[in-house]
Length: 211
Image (cartoon, rainbow, N blue to C red; front, side, top):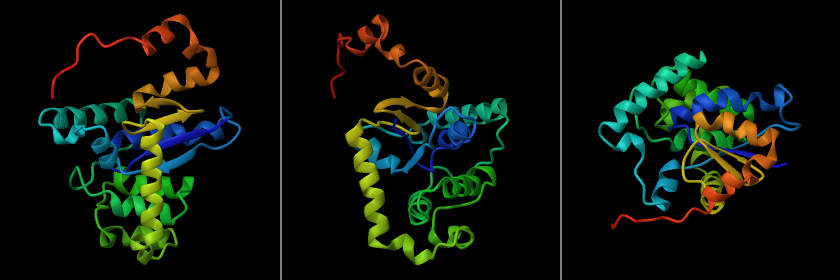
């Protein structure tokens, strides 16, 4: 079974789901750890012609309140960084340079969303790079940049349209609030093949908005 988790550090919902995703192997739900896949959310949005929630007035403020409410309900410590949205490339490249291990993902998420620290420049994230044993120069290396681009392109090719997204053998489950849905499908693969699920998966569109 292949279980991938697509995410971007810019997303607080990714931070919330990470708290659950990282435990899927530890609690025996999965035989092997989930593979984290850091990607550029902005590029995914661009590929689908979409805006991010933080780019829409009203939706931005609602999203921030909603994520705080979810964090409090789930008992997850959360502190927003100094500004949002922010440039996530330094954090993403640091994760890539550190091998995209669970420990690296956890450390970067904790730096930004647990401790509320800036991660929008190599200078801002330099202490974290040192703690992870990563030379800050690697964040600008061609290989690091290429790996992040490859992750993003592969995600778009797989059909990813938002973050976080949990992929279970190619089936995509988008959002922190879809985590229980993903677990249900993991427990019962036939769930997605029943009559109702099959029907809505092929439901025709009755009208399309003109661009």
